[in-house]
Image 1 (spheres, rainbow, N blue to C red):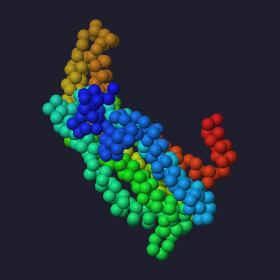
Image 2: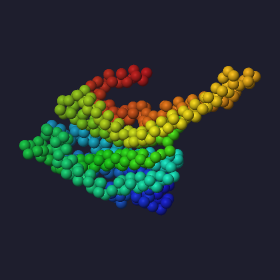
Image 3: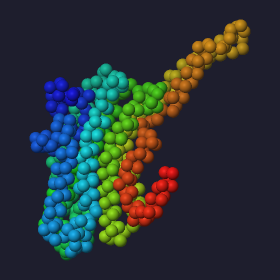
Image 4: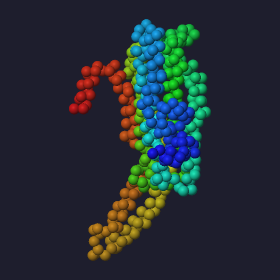
Length: 405
């Protein structure tokens, strides 16, 4: 059962700042519009219906109008059916962007509650923590934020960014180049003023959500948390944050698909090669990894302080214990008749050493090499089909079989 509903409050209301119901996606004007149109529920149900409706709204009119214009199959340098980028954008990237909402909601939702369940927030800071939640919810539900996104898209995204950097300089199904700028076809008008803005809005909304996520974590990091460098997760008790990055896998795959579509168009229509895009691919993957992992770095100063505190306090305790141990067990200490075998003092000394080793091994950020590699792979997977432009399918299959067998 949804926690906020159980408390008799709407889940997207700012006052419903129960940490167990934390979500960076469950709110905002678009969410409310989709709820009223029965395309989502209070917990992002009906995801297939949303994916189908939004994808078809962006793609289907383009197919129909390009047929009417006569540019679907031939007649221009880039017919509609040969425009790989447009199909990937609306039939692959958009479904991933919409579907990612449910995964992020489910994976990120328990995080706020974990701070309390693990006793990381001191009692005298609980109200500050709740204010962090309320601030995140207010920003997530902001009407002004989504209106600003639309203003940015129609004020700069379409007339400047897309026309100058996104459109081809040859005759396409959506526009013909002229001295005054691109002359849109019927399909082009829908593409420029409905499909592309819809996609850009979904993308900007995701960047805004990641900003909310980072801002929430940064505000929580301003609270003096009860961290311990002796914690077995080697992250001073914050190890649970490390798994949150996997929630963003669909978002990274969507970006990888967008890049794959763009590179494919350059290869098929402009004579480009996959090798020419290698630096661009590396740059995009690096950018995506920074985008996802950067929010987890805000606790590094507190973890470093916890490590210094552990080194100081446990170092003193260890020094005292070692002296007492030596006085008791080393020559001139314990009686000769007393065997050291099975004595708890020796085991305690070993435990003390293990505790100090744990403190020294604690990482400043809950980021693992395994997570970095998996997320980088997620971003690169959509680009894999482009290998067929470099290596014949038969040869590629042989190489894959050699790796597997």
